[in-house]
Image (cartoon, rainbow, N blue to C red; front, side):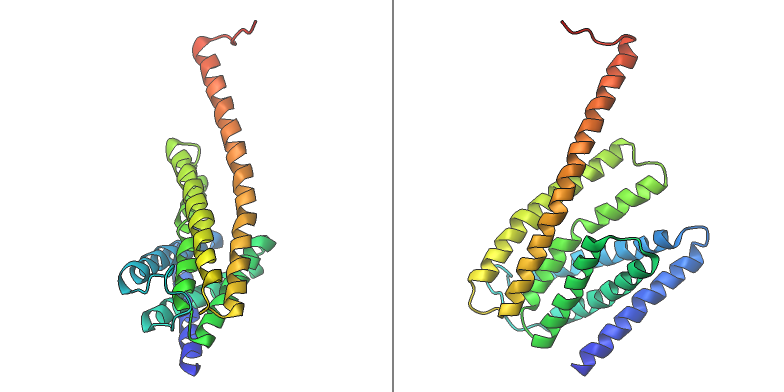
Length: 240
């Protein structure tokens, strides 16, 4: 366990050093810009590694929950643990996130710590990490598009649509299936199952916000289409 703690500390130092380096390179950019670059990099890295674990290294998380952690699973979880601690500290210091996102980071940190301490259920934690990070790059791209004045474009609409679709499919449907397999299996510990329920409940809280966003986005799109027709025709449409 001492080795895992030391590795997690090194991971934290690594993500912090990357952030500091980006701040020095991008002097004209804000602290949040550079932090989101770190977040984007972690998201891509986590997606690639957990995809390899699930589809190549194994075991398949839906069939083998509660199994012993593999060295690769431990390495990925330790890497992400350092990132989540860094990002949690950054968000608290700069007060950029609300209670829901802070709760997500807290549960992620506790879940990874519990998995590493027990020495099992690493495959489920990697699956959860994949599901929670799969939409993260899109969130960061969306933010960068806003900062560069390119959000109100076709690309911005595509990013939003893809984000909503991925969230619904991965976090709600696939995540729900993963939780079901976790709960009916006798192998995972009780606390691991409770953590799975908590993370899935948090996904539904995010889902409520996403539905509200989708409704606003749809209404704005319809209004823009109406205004465009009026501009083209030169007169308002008449209704009987």
